[in-house]
Amino acid sequence: MSEPKQKPTKKWIWTLLFVLINIAVVAATAINEFSGGAQGSAALVFTKSALLYLACCFLCLVVVFLAESTKYWLMMRSLGEKPSFRIAFETAALGKYYDCITPSGAGGQPFQILWLHRHGYSSGGSSAMTITGFITMQAGFILLALGVFITWRSVELEAIRYTAYFGLLLFSLIPVLLASFSFMPDTVKKIISAAIRLGARLKLVKKPEETTEKLIGMLDSYHQSFSVIAKDKLTLVCLLLLSLIYRVALCSLPFFVLKMFGAQVSFIRIFATTVYLYASIALVPTPGNAGAAEGAFYLVFSAMKSDGVFWAMLIWRLFSFYSFILVGAGVYAVNALQKRRRKGGESA
Image (cartoon, rainbow, N blue to C red; front, side):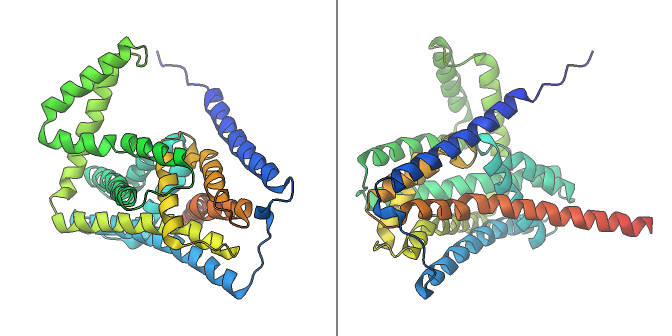
């Protein structure tokens, strides 16, 4: 007897909740910004300087997609698979697309594996490329954040700094567990089992045995996939470097956006603050950290007394979040049109 299909009601409720949270945060910041004639309500004037900084924003976005696409192209070569920069770009773009529309970015990796396999790449190679891309991206942000935390401790809001420390600690769990699992798997299994049993006693974890089995299985799968490419040390170093470039480009966006409005701010200060901001919201489960990202950006950058903070927040999210959705949707549209043309040519 087949199991009944799960109704999508719960999924739609969560989606609606995420949308409402996003709208509420944007509306709250707008009300706070424009009530009382706050200085941040300054309008954007498209001077030559503003257009130059706008071009820099587009350049950052190009670097982001180029870095992530190059990672997949390098991994294709390393695994002896057919290297295709187009497929590499599509995989990167659609991965970001699903990261942005699913809670906690959980949909990106599974779809990337499916997309690569659908285009003729082996199951093992598809998993290895996707998992390695994910792990090196996390490692790149951890390295960048640690560097910023050590060299720059001046943050406008003290709460953001400590929240960022805690966020990075939790964000680092999977890479640290994976690294430890490679060297002492039995010890890691015991630690995970003990931690989950403790969580069950505190009523924080349901079905501890099943949870333990799933987590250890995930780590084992990650380890097997990652170790395939990790044998090629030069490629691994290049992947980490490209992940750093990706993160630097993404964290540079707020500076160029604020400069579009004539804000008198320094690059290093805005860049470091942005890294703290990303670390502080890293584990917010909404798609693309929606709601938390807008709120954190507004709180931090309005404390700097910069002009046009509200509009800068919207433009920043356009480049750092909605652009990924637009590009991913564009990839879908192009592939759908090409598929339709091929079917039309075959039937002719």
